[in-house]
Image: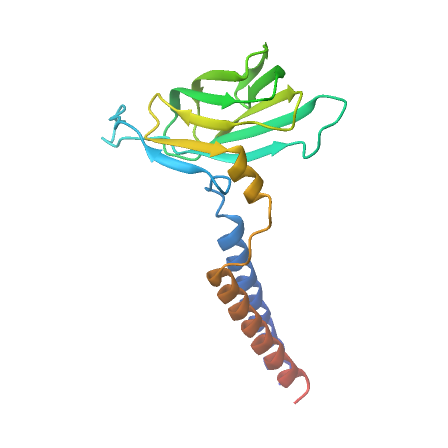
Length: 209
């Protein structure tokens, strides 16, 4: 009888662990998203180069992270942006265009995990970074020092990218305000809470009959 109870308890615990892992994967794995407020516009179609199987691998570019020092300080403000390719092919010959507007950029560094960093010194508020290649599942990072905690817009397009991305400073500020929990996330949490209650009740019933 004791062995039977132990087997049932172990089964319940495995089920509980599986439910928790599934929920974690559901939320943590959903990282193919732009920063909230980013707009997407279809660009001219590009057939690209087919692989040996006849498929047409294509990049999927996301503005996955943007950060600007929230207050103006005596030292230069930090601007940071991460652009990620989560598609099935490499992104080739595209542009990252950053308009700093009223801010004056002093120096920028562009780096990725597959290439050496490149540093540019300039004073123009509009900077265009020409990216020769961004491999799939890799990111490219743009880090700049500017005199004001502000940028006007970020735009990504050109090359073999099928959808151009754009983010304005106004939309960036809006996404810094914490968004309310969505309906589906609330439903998932409710279901997980119910499963936890059922599992715990079942364990208590077998441990304390």
